Image (tube, rainbow, N blue to C red; front, side, top):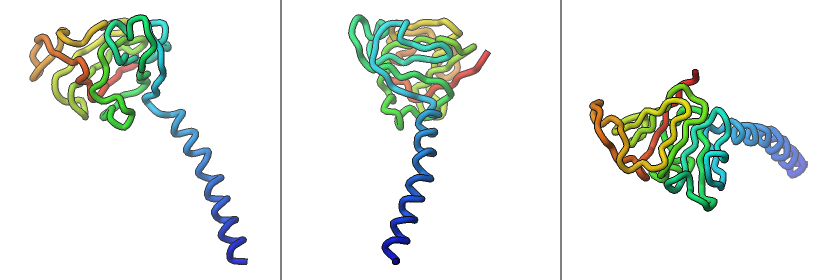
Length: 144
């Protein structure tokens, strides 16, 4: 009798947790695909491409960001992007450190950066050229 009760409780718990896990994955602010080119970036997204020139002519990792993210490390995207496309946000900030800190670059809607080595950005809140190639750790997004 105790085994049947334990089994029933275990099944009920599994059933209760399964939809929550599925919905949290769907609600994730970052998802990863493989592809290349600007056409791989969906509307209302900021796309971080693994390689420069939007992964060139070969498929590689693309992280699709749909909300601000204080830490890219849980998504295996920390310090990995080499090009970026803002495809639908009024403004985006790509930051070198977690929690929106460190050097950063601001991108308006439609802005493309085929490379992140020497881009016009901000260091210590002063306009300068920064190197964010393989150095982005957080993203802040504003809807228009």
